[in-house]
Length: 415
Image (cartoon, helix red, strand yellow):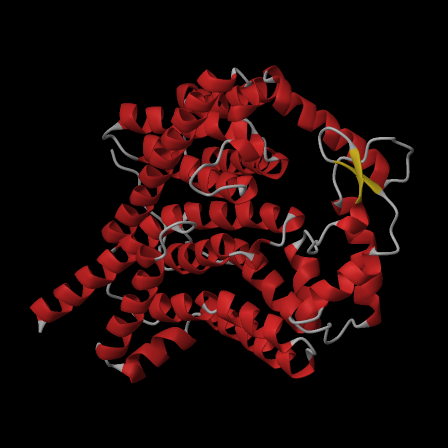
């Protein structure tokens, strides 16, 4: 029986590793990701012990919150007129209920294996970053255009997903920094990995994640110092990445320009005149707020919410600066660019409360792994500026990492 249990645990580990590989390959080769989820489900089904799995799951309220979150999406199809869009959305978000159930109702993983999965994720992100940088370099050699390294042009495996890639890289960067601070092994290699991820994060120029990394690093570093007797040398190690990030962001022209654009957007948000509106979110959020007020309790349903937004935006004659010229905002098909607004508009106040619970409750739990809180903090920032659960890149990342980290407790420092 012990051998059988060990083999099952090994299969769980291998399928989880396949899912991580699938995150990198999701745009052009679906088998590692889809196959990993399917095999994980089959292992869960044929390992039986359903009563024990049920007892384990109900002791984890955050896991039940994922189930409730998906159920309100199912219920919203009852009042969605666009059934095809609704069914596609349910299919997209199915991982939000399957992975938490598979991963939180069993206790097969040891903490060491979970740490290996986190390290594997970080290493995979370093590999993706190296590939992106090298591919951009080859394009730069041909074109002599530095924009090959910048923003949407940098991701080559996850094409045109700078926000999601920045989310991945920023969390992978925290894993690398955590290994440097906690472990006594391979510090130089982790430092190299952290440097590559830091450079890529700067070039991606996702303003949400440049801000998120800085704030989360400051808060987590402060908590770290307060909990432990930390030397000045260790404090310097914590401050260096933040200083390096800020310095590069100000030095690199394209990144600095996006920071200046952010100032223009804030002015626009508070009704100051500015001839360059560089981000449609300011207008989207205003129209979204008006729509949500009309259906506060139930929302419009997952089939209709986006359609209603774009109908409303037809009345908007605002111009959007696309990098070279102004174009009409109402010519684009847009989502709510804020996951909380998107959820509220789709499934109503209950869905919003469940999502807020998933994002806030971890900070009030005792003995949680610091990387869990860091991941939730980074995700929270991402949700404020993007509807991140509208793409597989966001759904699977949240559905996999959240339960994995939730099931890990605090870790002791190695001497």
